Length: 318
Image (cartoon, rainbow, N blue to C red; front, side):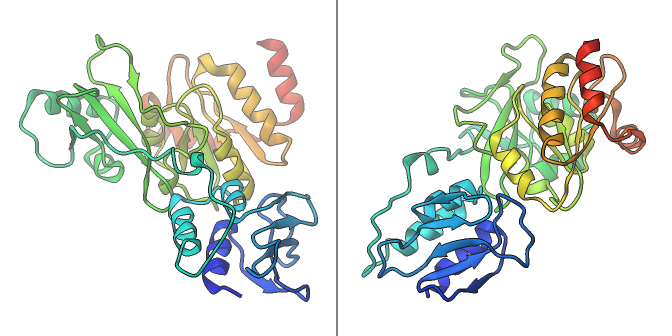
């Protein structure tokens, strides 16, 4: 069997594999149904001489597909793995009928050409105002370096801070163009790439620890510990997929007070998947960035888990 493809699939599904008696198949732990690791029920055909080459099926949850690319996409694989697979299958002497869909690659993002790093010394009024604005938000120099925050003096993102997001392979998957002055409109100016197909700040997340869901990038930066910004009012589907595969089964929801309906929707969804869910009640008119790291962590620690009855009551009171 092809060791390269085995390695790619193992990385994509987060599981070592075993040979099976059936010719051409290899079995993995299914990342979609959380079946125990020692009971590998995801079968993938790795024999290029067979018509079923690339097909896969889990015999527990019945997730299935006809190509490696659909498996990688459903498993939320990184762009690096997609490219590695395509390069391998396109090598001379190989033929593979199933090509990746355009959308598997169209979501690529690059930083604006005008991007300048704020962790390096800049000598202009825009950078000084940007640094002052970040300081007002409780963003330290260490945070700027860690998140590689920059700004633009010209172009489409003129006079805006640029906060990048990176996937687990360290590749850029999105960025946010945030205004520096309150008189600027709109508040955010972002690339046209789909947010549903990414996990914002994925490179910063430890999936073995509880994950805190917040609204914006500054909320995540201020929370500092395992926080994912949803960058809007909708939970990205890829974030849901990634959490379903994660070792943790605990999420904290810390959205702004004006997103109560979204908060309850998210809580209900994860409770239905047997997650431990905590709703983080912030002081009136405050977001995680206003509260600060120490206070935020104290609130999280003191918040009891939520139940379905709690969600029903909160809906009735809203």
